[in-house]
Each structure stands twice: as C-alpha cells, then as structure tokens.
Image (cartoon, rainbow, N blue to C red):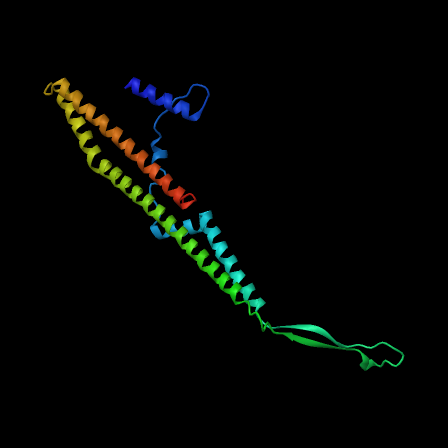
Length: 224
C-alpha cells in the first residue's frame, strides 16, 4: 500500500509541476461537487447559448440572408435625378432650367444569377448550422450517458455494497473479540471492506470526471 501511494504521489507531483513538499488525499467533497446534472433540455439550451461554433454558424446564416436581401435590392427598379434641360444666356428665363426624376429599370439584367447564388449560400450555411447542432447534441448525449452510468454505479455502491461490507466488518470485529473468528478470516473481511471503499472513491472520481466532460460539451459550468 505504501509503495502504491508513493507511486501515485510521484505521478501527481509530476502533473502539477515543480514545488515544495506536498501531501495528497482524496477530497470527497470535491468528488461529490455537482452530482446532480440538469435535465437534457436545460443542458441543450445552455449549449446553444455557450458553444461558440454554434453562435458562429448562426451568424454566418444571418450574413448569407443579408446577402440575399442585397442581391434582390439590386434587381429592383429605382428612382434617380436627371437634368431635363438647361440654358444660360441673355434670353434665359426661369423655365430654361429644369430637373426631373428617372426610373431605372434593369431590363437586360434582373440579377437572377446573383440572387440564386445568394440563396444557395443561405442553404449551405443553414446545412452547416444543422450539422454543428447535430454534432453538439451527439457530444451532449454521449457525455450525459456517461454521467448517468457513473451515477448509477455510485448509488449502487453506496446503497448496496458499502452497507454490506460495513456490517460484515462490525460482525467480524465482534466475533474476533469473542474469539469466535480466525484472525486470517477477519483480515480478509477487512481487506474486502477497504477494497469496497476504494471502489467507492473510484466511482466518485468517475462521476466527477463525467460531470466535467459534460460541462466541456456544454461549453459552460453547470453549477446552479
């Protein structure tokens, strides 16, 4: 056990970098942090708000739709000022100058090609947005399934395994004190109790890791 602890502490020391002497222990409160995840609908809604690639795809869709509007505007008739007549001379009168309004009609080019290209860009951007959403939902479902499995394992250990081994340990201690149990058998029961507690810590660690993975898939913390 001491050799295993020393090996684990050496790996942790290398992971956190150079520093002074440290002591490591399992922080059960930290392992239990965030044990209850929100519902799937809440998680998906948070991911829609937090994931930058989804917001970027939405912005590209809006930009493509603006391009369609500009292309259609270029094909519409429009008014312009034109000078109708002008004359400057000794016999000029106020009626010698005149201005009018012209209506420009794009008779030879209604800009249909550019409009079709802009609409095609909109469809492409919308397809990219849907693909990004599908990928994000897939990541969320996978992370949520891992969290549910880890939570089920923790509940099973806490409600079934730990009570049984603790009760067996109490009975073994009482029998050993009364001289009715072989010390080797008592040691085996104690070893099983320690193994069960280690399984519990490992299950808590897996659930915490699954929660962090889910937060990474959401793109934001799930606290609160």
